[in-house]
Length: 302
Image (cartoon, rainbow, N blue to C red; front, side, top):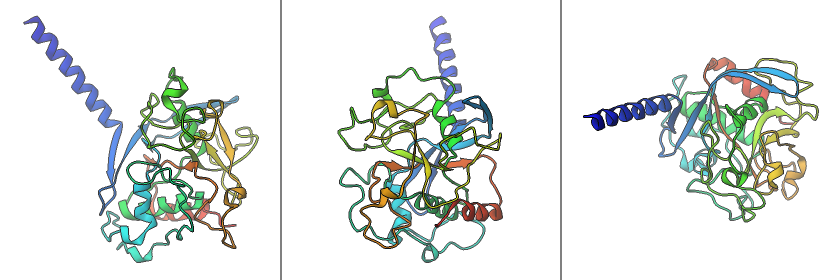
């Protein structure tokens, strides 16, 4: 009797945990495809950095770096379908501005389909994917701000995991990126926040960040030029000391040195196969008009 009661209590605790966990997690299938990506709910809260305190609103974040499998639906017209969950009009596959063909394989043989991260896209290319995803799913997705990214990376507590357990870096990667999710996640359930591929944020890079940030709630350093964005987390190219939640680099025109096009591509960074991105979906969804205005503000062509 006692053993049966103990078993029932254990089962109840397990089921309760699964329900709570499911409330913090959501799977999204891109309409007209078999591609599914998972989101983790990041509760809002206070974020302190270098003497500044910021308030972060709740948001959903990609459990993993965006996969090549998802990006290729947008990249290639032949992979897309007219099926859409957007209710604001009729989705047309032929009305989408898509990435130009790559003159070489920008994965450099490191991996594409089957769970590898989408790499080498410019920040504009990543944002254009988010824009396309809005018209496919009816939900607004974007890149994280630098504050959101670091807030989610740090999680609720400081990770006690060894860097080798959570990150692919220069010392263990074999000089290549790997499928997302092969290392341990942080305490919020996010994989590869450190290492593997560095990740785009929405912010213009500022050397004195966050001292120069004006907003105290949901700060975003709006872009003013084509280059110079903040990229977070380090990559398989970097040593462990540069694969941290505070690690940041400035994107550069040098990331397109091998691009033969004049002007340089707005879609591809030929020399940045170590940079990918991760999706964010705000809990409080903006209106269609606000979404249009966002992409007009976030995407700077020159």
